[in-house]
Image (cartoon, rainbow, N blue to C red; front, side, top):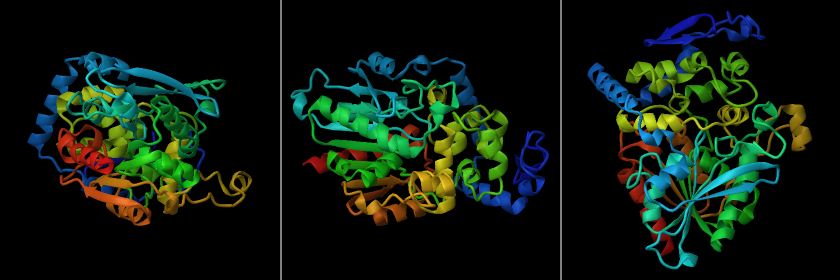
Length: 444
C-alpha cells in the first residue's frame, strides 16, 4: 500500500514513494530510520516487553473468549443496564447546529430516597468512544455502575459521530458533510446541550463531571470559551487528560501532526469524512508495533488499541471481545487532525483551517488558544506514567495552568495505559476508589 518498508526493532513499517495513487511527490515521502525511531520509540518503550510465554498465554485466553460469543458484545448501553437490573432512560437532544445526540441516564434506584437531592455525575467518553465504555467491565467494576451504587444520578454522554449520535436534521452520515467537525464543535455545541439537559431534568444547579481523554479536552475548551459553565461543574475529574500533546507517544497522532515526515503520505489515506483507516494503514500507524509487543493480531487490529496502546496486563483477556465489539464507536477525521495539530503546535488551540481560512473564521492567521486560566472549576487529575496520549510532561503543564487544582494522582501501576483507565481489571481499585472518595469529599 505504501510502497517501501523499513524494519525497526522487528517492527515492519510501510513507507516510501511507491504508493501508486499518491498525489504527493516522492521527495516529500523520503523517510529514514531516524524518522521512524522518533515516531515509534516512545510508544514501544512505554509498553511492557512481554515474554514469548506471556504472549502465548494472552493470545490463547483471548482466542478462547473470542470463540464464546459473549452476550454483552451484542448489547447496547440501555440493554446492558437492563440486563444487570439497573434503571435506565434514553434522552435524545438536538444541538444548535442540528445533530441529534443520545444521552443515557441511570436514574434513582428504588432504594434511594429524595431524587431532588441526589448528586449528578456526568461521564464523557474518550476519542472514538461512547457511553458503552463506562459499562463494559460490568457491575462492581465499571465506573457508571459504581457511581450509581454510591447514590449518584449518572448520565453518560455521547458526542456527535459515535454510533449513538449519528443523526442530523439535514446531513446524512454517508456524506462527508456530516463529518466536518472537530473538538471545537463537540465542546461548544454538544457538551453544553448535554450538560444543560441533565441539570434541567434533575433540577440541579451543578454536576460532577468525569471525562476520559477527549472527554476532558472538550470540557476544558468549553469552560475556557463559555466561563458560565464553570459554575455548572461541582468538580471535574480528569482521567488521562488530553489538552497539550507535545510529548504524545501514539504513532497515529504523531503521524497526524502536520510536522511529521509521514504526514503528507497518510493524510491522503485518512480521508476527509468519518475516520475509518484501512487495515494496512492501521498496521503502519501502530498495529504492527502492538502485535510485535503482545503477539495478538486480532487485538492489534482494533483502532482504539492501535491509537492508544495496549497493556497486556490491563484488561482481562476474556473481556476483550466485549470491549472490541463496542470500539471504535466512531469520530471524524477532522477530530483526529485536531489532535495532530496540537502535537505540532505545542499549544491547546481551536482547529487550524490554514492561514487564509483562519483569518475568515477567527479574524487571525492562527487559531486562538484555549486559555486555561479561565477554567475555574475544582479539578482532580488522574494520570499514569506510560500513557501514550496523556504524557506526564503534558499533564504537568496543564496542571500548572489550571487555577483551581485540588489534587493530582498518578496511578501506582507500571505500564498502566490510556485504555486501562476504562478497562483494566485494576482500575476499580487504583483509580475509581480514589475518584469516588474525592467526589464524596468535595460534597462534605
